[in-house]
Image 1 (cartoon, rainbow, N blue to C red):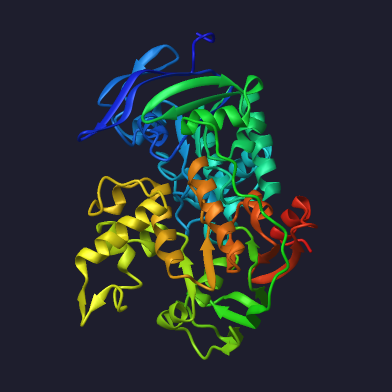
Image 2: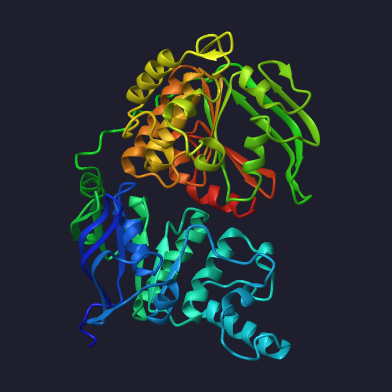
Length: 504
C-alpha cells in the first residue's frame, strides 16, 4: 500500500456547457512530496483542484486515493478522505477565536463547554507549535495578522487529520520571513508523509520548495517535471506555449518636480481605527513609488483617498500644486489620476457588461464619446476595438460579458481604460496578483511605459519581487505608519521584510 500514489487522476474531464475546462487530465501525486501545479489563467488548474476538494464534480474520469477509486461529491466527502484546501481568501469566522474556528464542525457533544474548549485550545496551540506555525489560539481571528490567519487555516487541516493539503497562492499575503517559515513547515509536513499541492504563479518559490512540477495549458496536462531537472525558463515556455518575451528594461532616470505631496495625513477606517496615521509621502513626476506591506496596514485606504473614494481626518494633500479640500472621484479624474483597484471585478469592471461599456465608464460624457448627450455608438465601437487590439485583450467579441474573460485579459482591459486617459498619476493596487507569467510581464511593461513617458505610478503590492523590479523608491507601511523608505539601488529584501513585520 505504501508504494501506491497518494492521489491519481485518470482521464479527468470537467465541462461547463460547451467549455472544456479539464480535458482528460492524468496526474499522479506521491506520498510525502510537494507538488506544484502551474498554468496560465484559465489553464484549468483551479478546476482540477476544485474537483479534488469536492467543490466541482467531474463530468467523467476517475480519482483514486491509495489505489482505490473514490467519489468526491462535496467538500465534506473530501474531508472524510483526508483532503484539505487552504484557499487564497480564508474561510474563517472573524468573531470566533482561532481555536473555535479550528474545531468548527466537531461532532463532540461537549463542544460548547468551557472546560472542553480550554483543553482544545491548549491542544491546538501545541499542534501549531510542533509544526512551526504558532499563533494565539484563544484570540479572536479578527485580532490576528493575515499571516497568522493562514496558519490557522493550515492547522485546521492538520487537526482534522488531512493527509493531502492543497494551498492556493499561499504566499500572496505573507512577508518574506513568513513565507520562509511556511516553506520550512511544508518541508516538515512532507517529511511526515503529507502530500502537498501548491498552485502559484511565483516561479522562484516553485523552484525553491517543490519536488515536482506539473504544467497545464488549455485544460490539458502538458508535462510533469522534476524540479532539479528543469528551469524557470522552461516552465514559463511550457505555460505560455513559447519562449517568454523579455520584459522592458528599467532605465535609470532622474525624477522630475514633486507631483504629489501628502503631509501628516490621517485616515480613520470603517472600524474606527487609524488606517493611516500621520503619513507623509512625496511622489515625483516620472517615477514609480512602491508601497510595500502586508495586507491591512493602510494600503487600501491610501489608494482610496487619492482616488477620491475616502475622506481623510487631518493633514494636507497637494497634487500638481493644488491643495485638496476634500475627496472627490470626479475631481481626482479631472486632475489626471487613474486608479486600477485591488479587486478588478468588484470595483474596477462591471462583469455583466461588455468591453465597450466598461471602456466608456470614465469618458462617456466627453465630446469625443457623446454628442448632445447621446453616445456616438459606431465611433465608440471602433475606438473600443482599437484599444482591445492595442492592449492585446483577448475576448470572444466586444459585447461578451467581461466576467467571461481570464483574469489577465480583465486586467489588460482595465489598464486600457485607465491609461487611455493619459493620467499624470496611475494608482495600481496589486496589478499582477493572480496573473500568469505572460499577463504579469504585460502589466509590468505598461507600468514601465508610463514611467518612460514621464508619468508617475503609485504601485501598491505585496509582492516584493515586483517592487524590487519596478520601483524607484519603496515605502513600507505598517499599522498605518511609514516604517521606512529605500531607493531602488539600496533596496534590501531582508530589511524590507523586517519593516513589513513592524521592526524598525
